[in-house]
Length: 248
Image (tube, rainbow, N blue to C red; front, side, top):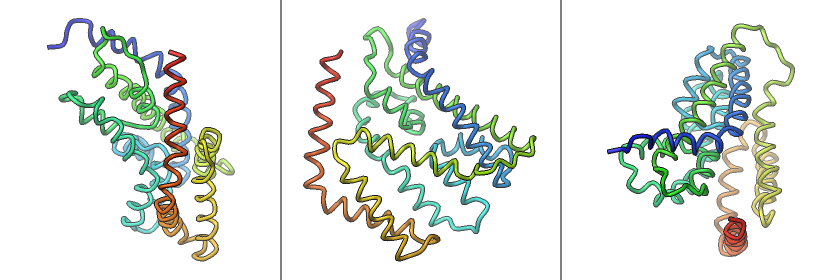
């Protein structure tokens, strides 16, 4: 049985850590909603995606595909590749999620980059129920994303927005993600592999069919170079953990 005040204490512990993320999620969610409306989708579609998918960049991808021809296999493969990093997040959270009971299904479903970062690395006092802490982190982050997508969908459908370049929002999002990775990674080998494989696939298959071949080529090359890449990224990760421990 949960002790009185446990939920309140966990919420108070989670809220300050989530506020910056929530602010970003609201504005980025508005962009996603407006982008979806600019494609002719109904106002409620961004809200539905934010609840059913909750995948951030994946929702931009799905929104861009919905107005086109019905192609579920391509949609599945593209979203799988875009969100494949969550496979590794899940492996990292096997132990933290152990014993979460009824909270566990939602924690698995609602795990995004930011929630994973907080739930995995936050130093939660022993007096705070970690299960409720992680649940509130996930709820606050997803809730702000749902609010942003809903507002964007409503604004985009009520106001005749014909913003030049709104379709570039998804491209800009991926550029920001790539730049963040470039600045933080210990080696640029994987990033350069991605750029080279994409350029090669674009030249061979053309702009309409290059994405899946590029992803497959990246997977093959990175897998083949795994023995050389793992020590580089592994050593950097251990160094980062040591420095965090010293700071704490």
